Length: 230
Image (cartoon, rainbow, N blue to C red; front, side, top):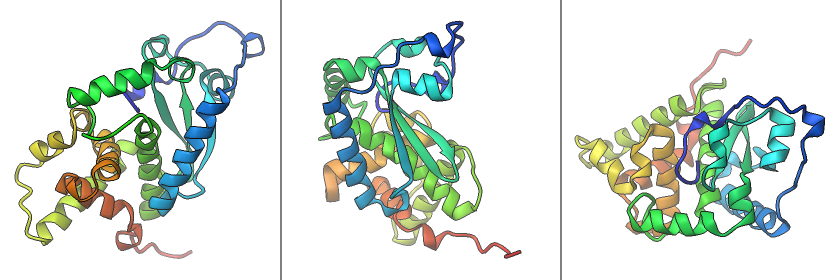
């Protein structure tokens, strides 16, 4: 997620019938900025190009995919969800869409080291696109759908091997990941997403493991397993 949170947001119990819920679309400016970031990310990481087709508000998501857990009402964030065959969707919750709170809290978290240095509010969606790219990479490399965290572990392992091949020690991998950001240390999926934000925000000054992850994401053809053709 682009901000504090976990994959546990999906789903919560809600007794209100779907047809009785009020559906509110995203604010036009929120939607415009998000699609702009999606396009920019896809240009920089072609593995995910044309693989994100849904950008929804919280109520639109619930109508199409089912209710969210109650704790999603806390805080402002965006979240990525798989839609099959390496494709993904993104929804933006009400708090992030309707107020500036989410952007202010992101800036505070960045200052506390929870997000990469020099990152900004656009990286909330950029981070989510990192999860989408992970899903796309996994489907292209493995030929099947696997959990995002499982694919992220593959990417990180490939990245550390790449670093080792270039003479960079990877003995302290956890410490290297923590240097990306506090959020990157939470789990492999967040490591990959935050690494891509780090590279976007800091370029050549990004952490070495971030640059290696970026390299792996951008070259899935190097890791595609040779599958038997039926």
